[in-house]
Length: 107
Image (cartoon, rainbow, N blue to C red):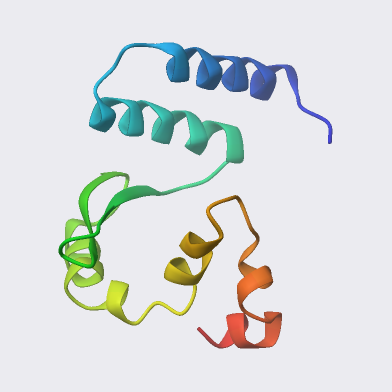
C-alpha cells in the first residue's frame, strides 16, 4: 500500500495520539479527526460497548447529524447485522468476513 506524504504524516500523528496520556473520550475524538483525514472519510462515530446495558453508549462523533445518531442509539444498533458479530472476533475483520457481500449490499 502506498501512503502519500500527507497520509504518512497523519499516521504518525495517530501513533503519537495513542501514546499521549489523554482521557478515553478525548482520544477517540482526536483519533476520529485523524481517521477522517487518513481515510478520506466524511463522518466519524465511536461508541463503547456497555456490557451491563447490552448496548453501545458514550458516543462521540464528528460531522454527523445528531438526529441520525439518536436514531442509531434508539433503534439501529439493535438491528445491525454486522457490528456485534465483528465485535466477537476481538480483532480487526472485514465486514465481508462476517456477512457475505450480497447480504451486505442489501443492508
